[in-house]
Image 1 (tube, rainbow, N blue to C red):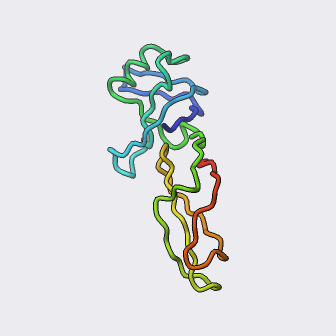
Image 2: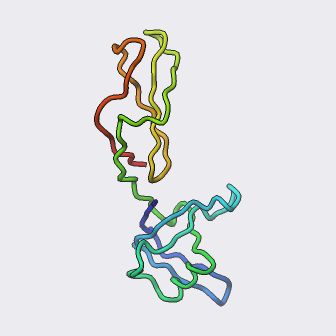
Image 3: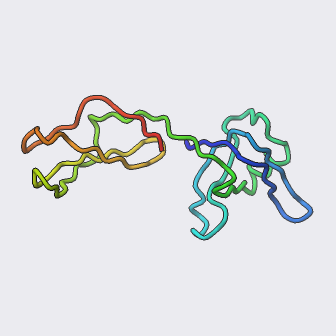
Length: 140
């Protein structure tokens, strides 16, 4: 689940029938993939939990029914806090390097946000490098 905080007060709806979303609210975000890339709306917003603390009642109903679209400047996306285990790569890739001639890179995918991370293997492990032990925070 991607979350963020609204950076400014936004007005949604049609002329004469507007809903206001105040600045500083914690929101759950999902990418607006159903719209063209040139559209101003980049995220669909919803309350993080059932209480919807700070959400005006009319805006909450609008978000559940029609959808509450936010642009790039309307929300600050929180970094993903998921810890990814280094022992479970999705795949490995061999890439050309200066010295030694080939290098292995392990590819990891965050289960929460779907971001892809590439981590280079140690060069001194021979022909069959293995993933390291430990983990790292996604942060995207």
